[in-house]
Image 1 (cartoon, rainbow, N blue to C red):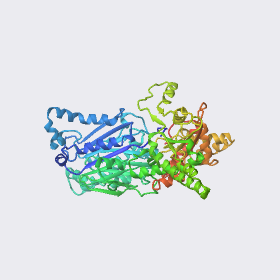
Image 2 (image 1 turned 45 degrees about the horizontal axis):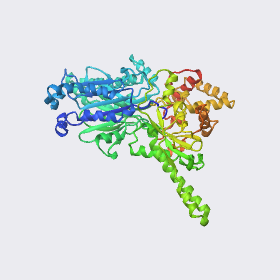
Image 3 (image 1 turned 45 degrees about the vertical axis):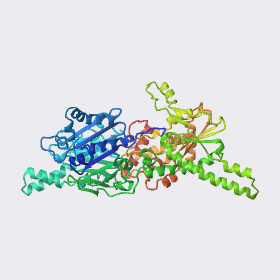
Image 4 (image 1 turned 30 degrees about the horizontal axis):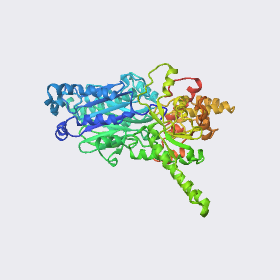
Length: 633
C-alpha cells in the first residue's frame, strides 16, 4: 500500500496443558511455550510497530510467590526488546549454573516467565498515545487470585463514552478515558460481581474463607462474565484475557469483524489473530486451525478444559475485507487466492483502458504487498487476450495467412519489474521540503525498458487511501521512465468512509475519494448538498446511536464511481508531470465476488455493521465541516 495506514493489533494466547517437566523431557526445554510465544509474535510483526507486551502466569504457585510476570516495550523493535528482558535472567543462570536452566521444577518456582499460560500482544495505536501505559497486556490487580485480570486485544469500540459513563454511574472512577482502560474495568467489574456472588453462596453454606477461595476458582463462570460485560460493546474486537488463578479466554465480536483462530491438541492450546502463523509455529495443516465463531469465546479453564461458548448472539457476518486485501499475511491459502482474484477481475477493464494495445503497454506493481494481486491481474490479462486473439482469428476466417496468424499468436503482455524499493533509505530529515525530495527517491526504477512517449505503464497497488504518497513520490518516480501514460489501479474500491473498528482511518478529510466528491460538488455548483448533509448530521447528533442514519452517502450520490476516479486522477497528478495519469479502482461487486465470505465493506459503501459506525461517520463529517481535527470516536 503506497499510503501506509495503521491497522489492527495482533494477539497470541498460549496454554500449556502439561507440566513444564513434560516439555523438558520431550522437547529438551521447559521453554517450549515461551519459544512458541516468540515465534507467534514475530510472525505477526506486521500487526504492530507501536509496542509489544507479554505476560506469563504460573498455575498453582504457592502463596507469597509471584505468579504473574509482565514485560512491555514501546521501543523501535519492541518484540526484540521484551524478549531481551525476558531472557536476561536465563542468560545469567546459563553463565553460572547451567544445570538449573534445565530444571523445570526450579524454573517454575524461581524464574519469571516459567509458567503454563502466556499472553502476547502487538500494538498498533489507534487510541491514546504511544506511551508504555498504553501498551498491552494491561493488568487489574487484586490480592485474591480470582479477581486479578490481565487483558490484551485487537479492538476499537465506537461507544467508549457510554461504557465509561456506565462505570461512573456504578461509582467507579476509571483512571483514564481510553477503550483499553474502559474495557478492562468493565470486565473487571463483572469479574468482581461473579466473585462476590460465589463468595456469598459458599459463605451461606458454612464454608471457611480458604475453602471458598478454592471453590470460587473452580466454579467461576467466565462465559457469564463476558456475556454481561459485553452487552454494551459496539465495535470490532478479538479480546484475550487471563484471570489470576488460571482461567483464560479469547472473545470475538458478534459480527466477526476482527479475526481470531486457534489450534488445540493434548499438549497445547494456541490462539492468534491469523491462521497461517499458527500453521507455521505449530507445523499443522490449515484444516487443524479453527476460527473462533463470531459472538463466541474460547474459554480455557484452570483444569485445562477447553470450550467454545456463545457469549453474544451472532449477527450478519461482516468480517473486515481489508484483512483480505492487505493486512493479513498472504501465506494463508484463502487470502492468497482472494488477492489473486481481486487482480484477475480487473483485467478486462485494464485491457479496455489500453485499447488492447499490449505491445505498447508495460504491466507492473508497487509496492511489494501488491504482488499477489499482480499475479492474478496478469492471469486475467492473458485469459482476456486469449479470447481477443481467438476472435481476431475467427474474424479473418479461412483467408488468414500464416504470417497474420503468427502475428496474432505472438502478442503477449509485457511484464517488467519497474520499481525497486531502496530499503536503506530513511527519511530522518525534519524539514518538509527536504523530506519530500528524499521520499521521491525511496524507489529506484528500471531504466530503458519503457519506450519514451509511446508506452503506457499499468501499475497495480493494494489500495489508494489518501493518495499523498502517490502524488508526492510514486508518480514522479514513474515519470522518470517517460511513459506516454500512467494507469494506477487499486485492487480495493474507493475508500469513502472512516473506519472505527481497529484501522486508523477516522477522518474523512484524509480520503482522496471524499476530497474528490467535495471538489466535484463545488465545481458543479452543488455546495448546498454539503450544507444539507451537515445540517442532517447536526440534527441527529444527540440521538441514540441506534437511530442515526449515514447521510454522508449523499455526498457521493450525484456522481458515478468513474467520475470520482477521474477527479482523483486530476487531484493527484503533479502539475509538472509529463505523462497523462489515470487512476482506476476496483468495483464493489468484484470485491464481493473475490471475497465472498468476508463482506465487511463499510469503508467503501458506508454500510456499517453496528449502530456505532453511523455515529462515527456522522461525527466525522461534522468535524470536517467545522474544521475540527479530533477523532470521531
